[in-house]
Amino acid sequence: MQISAPFDYARAESVDDAIALLERHGPEARVLAGGHSLLPMMKLRLARPEWLIDINDLAELDFITEAPDMVRIGAMTRHTTLLESPVMARLFPIVADAERVIADPVVRNRGTIGGSLCQADPAEDLSTVCDVLRAKAVIRGAAGKRVIEISELRRGPYETSVAQNELLTEIRLPVRARSGSAYEKVERRVGDWAVAAAGASVVLAADGRIEDVAIGLTAVGLEGTAHRAEDSLRGQVPSEELFTAAGRLAAEDCNPVEDQRGPVDYKRHLADELTRRVLRRACALAAQRG
Amino acid sequence: MQITMTVNGKEMTREAEPRVLLVHHIREGLGLTGTHWGCDTSNCGTCVVLMDGQPVKACTVLAAMAAGHDIRTVEGLANGATLDPVQQGFMEEHGLQCGFCTPGMMLTARALLDKNPDPDETEIREAISGQICRCTGYATIVRSIRWAAEHPATEEVSV
Image (cartoon, rainbow over all chains, first blue to last red; front, side, top):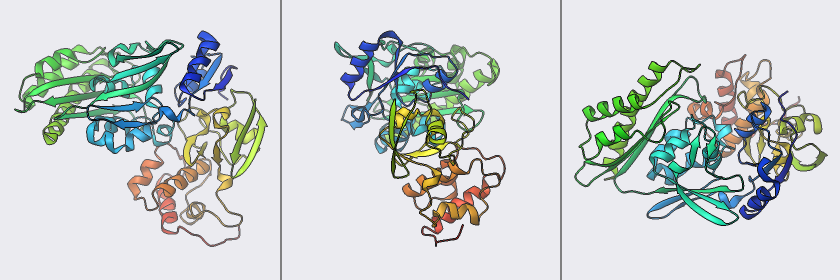
């Protein structure tokens, strides 16, 4: 039987209450969102908090709000909600692409976007999605709220810039005209972590050239986005030759390690191939929305 | 801590440590052993119960997190002697052999049909894709759920 070490439990009734509880219980208190990463880690004693602050009752953090220039997503929005959201499907097709291959439908009923980003697993699909959509993260603490670029959120594997007494409350996705996005993942079996995955977001200029592009890779040791591949595409007219070159650059710039999910050369091959595929689809979608 | 939750329509209060998982609370605390305890790692799905109508893996939810919520277990499917169409479907179409995965499969099926009363095979397979059956295979389970969709109200049967 896998049971965690003992801890104390408190249920937050509001964001302010959650922050107050984190302040009161100090460095050994952890926020409990969907629990599908934290509880398994606690069972294995990879995490051993003394207090859990349960934020599952915070309906105020479960929302998807569309404005002309930005979509705001509450940190406690569940994977299932994101997968089924018509707003996401219309503006950010990459979100449903990724959500469809995150764990399984029952786990997706519990897991949240905020929990996923704060877990900061190197194989976390939504980290890549938020990277390429150039998301912003809203973080609240006792002193107020701060808004940071998503690139400033992840500090390394399982580490973020959210302080112990702070709460990630919201993700903001900028809405851009003539944009398209896509995500593709290769997994050993349904619901597994990625062997490798790629995500891309493309904005086309009025003349059809690539105005802006972001490429992210999951589980293959790429910090941030694939800058050389992105630079090779900016200002160009989308073409197969261009995607091939970009895939090669992205594969060169990642740094996969061999593990039970495959050897380095296989993962690099996937980074190359998946980059090409997501660029192809993201450009096609952007052209459609033009 | 005192944990009060509604289980199959009945309010139940028991003492439990915060670290007790919902699956153990239901089985040992409340004595409802219809919910099975399997892999312990949120993979196999035999521990699935409905929390506020949604399937959740009870090995990865704390009992404390379920306090104040509405839980439905396999014991809450039948209405007296009247089986839920999903239960009837599993009988008609041989949806089980050993029965270990059955409670989780049936509750996921119930939640699917509540949301989508006429799912096609692909939708059924997607819905149960977080659950593992190691004896009948999935074909008969899918057929059982289809049977339930086609027979939304079942007759009283003697069991």
